[in-house]
Amino acid sequence: MYIKRYTIAAFVWIALVGWYVYAYVSQDSISIDFFGIPMPSLKIALWVVIPLFVLYFASVAHMTFYSILRNFRLRKYEKDYEKMINAIIDTYLGKKETNYTFKTERYKLLGTLLENSVVFPKGDVSGKIEDERIDKVLKTIESIKNGEVVDLKPFHLSSDNELVIQNIRNKYKKGELKAEDLLANANKYSKTLCQEVYTDYVKTATLNNIEKYKEFLTKDSLNVILSRINADEYTLDISNEKLLSLFKKLDLKKEDYLDIAVALSSTDMIPEQRIKLFETLSDENEDAIEAYLYALLDLEMVAPVKEILENSQANEYQNFKAYVALKECNKHFNIRLFI
Image 1 (cartoon, rainbow, N blue to C red):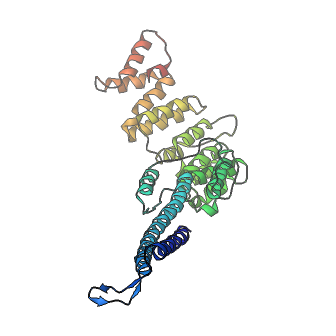
Image 2: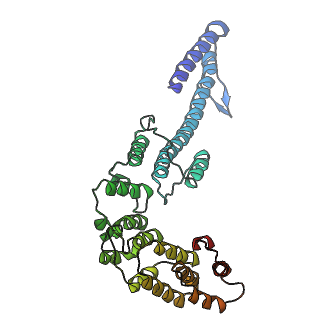
């Protein structure tokens, strides 16, 4: 468009210069030598116009060359813009493995920042974005946040993607997916989701089914299982051997064993079974000794506790030693205050 305008203006200017020279300067003809080569005799006005034509073609060539360079540069920006839109979409969707190569420096900077950032829409901005692709993603995210079930297949997300997990969670909560169906096909879902569902599942599941899917056992689901032992509703009759097998699925620390002891003290587990359980645990793992002492003292069995404490180091189990000493002075406190 600009070259066309320039051409029209240039031709008008050249015609005017040629006319002016011919009409008011000279109508004579002359012959000149060009690097020793005699040129034909031409009107002076024509000799004046020829350099202007040369200048015109040179300037057009110059503008065309830089116009082509600019077009290439613009194409790079346009391609990088498309890549940036895709990168924003992937970041919104929580895709971890993305690799975009930008050609322009500005988009390289933005791309690097985006690849090393976590971006999530704040509030409902769907319908406010002009780009249809981004707007579609925002609407999908908002629907999932609102507890709806959406089709995520077009986005090709991995099973451990947070949106996928939440979408399946929504499906589970709506009753479109049963807990056992999910656990039985765990290879299709993330382990985190399976563990969440298992925690809900063990509230009513039979012991056989609890053991069947115990690979998804967590400390939270273990607490649910323990709360059902000899309970009035959904009661669970479980042997120490099976409890021990469940404990071995977890990496339990000293504090965890104490938590288990406290949890079992609130159940209707038979005292003899509880004592035997923690006795076995303490024999296998020193970290469970304090839980064993707690279980004994909770059951008012001070004598075996004193025997253990007397054979311990001076700096060991000082909280339990203090409790026993107070009890011998007829000072009665809740054992939970000493853990």
